[in-house]
Every structure is written in structure tokens, then in C-alpha cells.
Length: 123
Image (cartoon, rainbow, N blue to C red; front, side):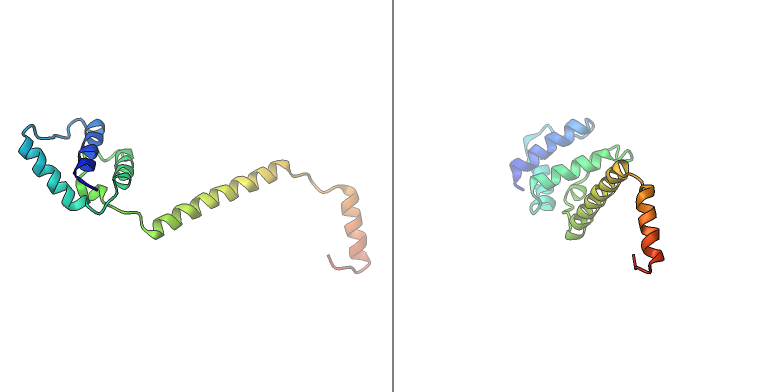
């Protein structure tokens, strides 16, 4: 992230949190940008914005976030967990769709299975 990205981030924060104050003095703004940049320099803007969106979704977050709250990088574990959750949801949906389309075994099929069992065939 660079200084321009930090200012974009400030605009997004201000939009979601009107009480977020950006100094009116140019020197104070520069200092604030520099301070935030120390914590966010290794964080891509897209990650910080995604973290801001997640932060804002939490009802207990009534005040603007600090830079550390936006600097959290997703870990491999988080990515894996998200993927597994999505795959699990897809699997549940597939099973539900299969159950909705399933038809019960017919009496003819039951009779044939019973005959095979009586003859000693393994099922």
C-alpha cells in the first residue's frame, strides 16, 4: 500500500463511519497518512478494503477501525477453511437435490432382491 491507497482507504472509512475524523490541516493529514502507512505498507489495498467491509458488518464495531484491524492478511488456514466451507455447502446442496429427485425402490425390485438372497447370492 502507498500514500494514495491510504487516502482512498480513509475515504472508504469516512463513508462507513462519518465520525472518523480526518484533520483539516495538511501537515496533520500527512502525518496521519504516514502513521497509518507504517502499519499498512505490506497490506494490499484490496485486502484492507475487504477487512474494512468485514469489520463494518460486525454490529459491535460502532467506531472506525484502527490500522491494525485492517492489516490482517488472510492466512492459508483461513483460505483453506473458506474453501472447505464452500465445498461442504455445495455437497449439502447436491445431496438435497438428489433427495428431492429420488424415487423409492419398486416392489418388482424388492422381489428380485429377495429372490437373489434366497438363492444365496450376495448383494
